[in-house]
Length: 359
Image (tube, rainbow, N blue to C red; front, side):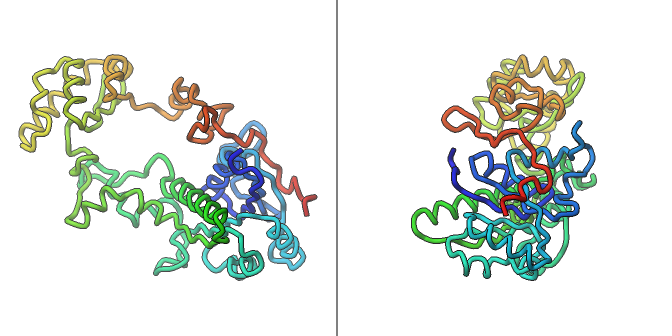
């Protein structure tokens, strides 16, 4: 495994941090969750639950990990944590800034004792800046980045809550990427490092294409090339649902028009005339309503420009994702194949304190 012999102490809970360490576990790292003895990770008890009574969010991002229960407010358990930290390559915590220091497990203290340690703090707004001490959740973070504003079709509509917690998941990915970079640098003799990762910063990074426009003006919802301004890159209602059309390049647009039976629209691609764009959109609106989403996908899917909008239930049953191996055994796994295989930490979920005998 890629991260065999890498030990990670995971002090995070809920979603962002556990998602980050799930990716590390799938790559072969020995991930040990450090949980409070009473409740542990709150996600364990969050509804809905599996048949075994475990919160589905917990089940989704804690495969193949181990669990040790420690009360870090006590000197005895801090000593136990210190003994574990001496064996660790990575420590990741998701407390509000300053909390780890108050508990006596902050990065300066641990890295003074263990210079090769990769220490990652994953917080809402980061360890610096005017929002440093603000509590928050995913919706707050994406609200501050401009991302939430761009979820509506136009400024007359209300912003829409995205269907997935964007900042949480992006923050987890950024933490994983940064930890891997730290491990690589250490392998080259650079020693350990401290990573200050922020969920809001991660979400802000995702807005780069829109932010690029914001530096020169005020991009508005539905009025940028990738948010509905262009009729050849938009969402259309069908006889029974919705499809996406994404024919940005002229050759793909031509292939779509010829396949869909609207060759008269080929030369309209790239027009900046509002009236002509409106006419193209009206023609496409009428055209897409003539067939079901599945029929459109079967007709035009191979052009690569049309895809049916699937529900999450449809998506996890999609043959493509199952054949690729990212969906398996009732879970979504590692999002890449390495040497033809999907890396996985296995399917077991640790009970709270299951591995207390390690210390």
